[in-house]
Structure formats: C-alpha cells, structure tokens
Image (tube, rainbow, N blue to C red; front, side, top):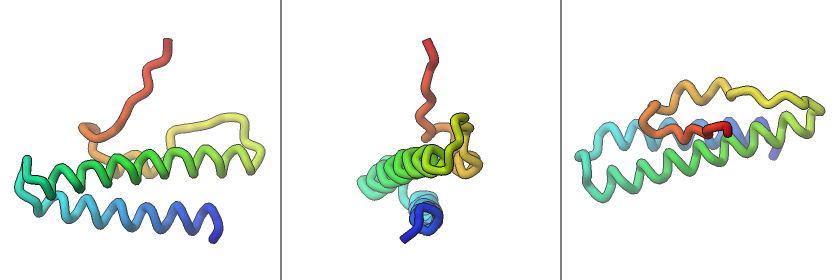
Length: 81
C-alpha cells in the first residue's frame, strides 16, 4: 500500500467517523468514542503527510489540505515558542 493509498483510506475512515459522530447523542459514550477516533485519524494523517513530504525531499512542511475537514474544536494546534 502506498502512502497516498493509506492517506486516502484514513480520510475515508475519518469521514465515516465524522458522519456517525454527528448522529450520536452529544456526551454519549459513542460520541466520545468517535471523537477519539477522529482525533486519532487526524494524528495519523498528520504523521503520514509529513513522512510523505520528507520522503519526497520536501524540506518545508505545510498544513495539509485535509485539515480543513476536521472541525476546529477537534484540531490539535501546536504553539511555537
């Protein structure tokens, strides 16, 4: 499986988790489980896109375009010192 195929697969899983999360009762165990899944998918996507850029010789790491599909409330922002 190529990095692009892995990224596409994780994007599909993330989209599915988002859709199920929207249908879950807020603060229910299912809602929290899906929130955790979405965060984990986001972390995996972040890692895979950085690794892909590094393997392709790109020295500049930019915000990935898929980040826009993750609600701001779920995004983990890094603060630079």
